[in-house]
Length: 128
Image 1 (tube, rainbow, N blue to C red):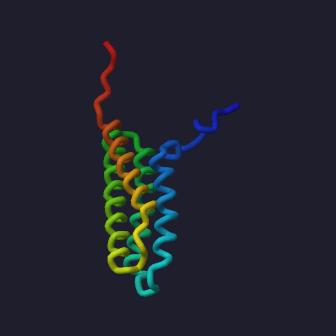
Image 2 (cartoon, helix red, strand yellow; image 1 turned 90 degrees about the vertical axis):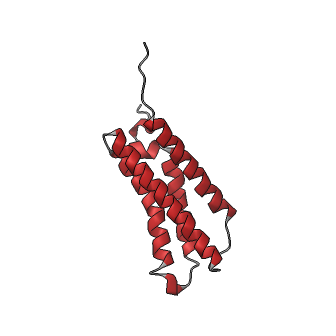
Image 3 (cartoon, one colour; image 1 turned 120 degrees about the vertical axis):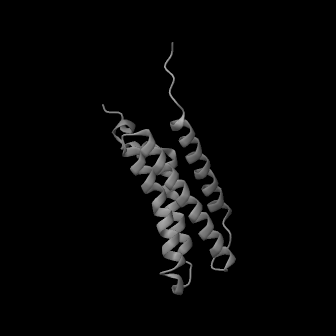
């Protein structure tokens, strides 16, 4: 019998990708409360930033070189910072209340992306 985990695509095995998929759902739920006048403004920007995070993680995981993988993880981390800023703007403008759950997920994903980038970026030393 085949190991279900091994049949998954490379990005689907990454906990940070799964967490970022949860973040997309939260971002869509959050932005649904924005005023209609923001449909083409903050709503669209926040949703694009959210979708960009797991998309770039997945694209990086499919690349053949470490440098490309790191570049896409860096882009994902940048998109995460954008989303964080946009949700803070939404709170400041009174569109939504602050969400400790969302903020904790953003912090967790940022830490996991940084840890993954550090792990991938370290030179591999072969045993003597």
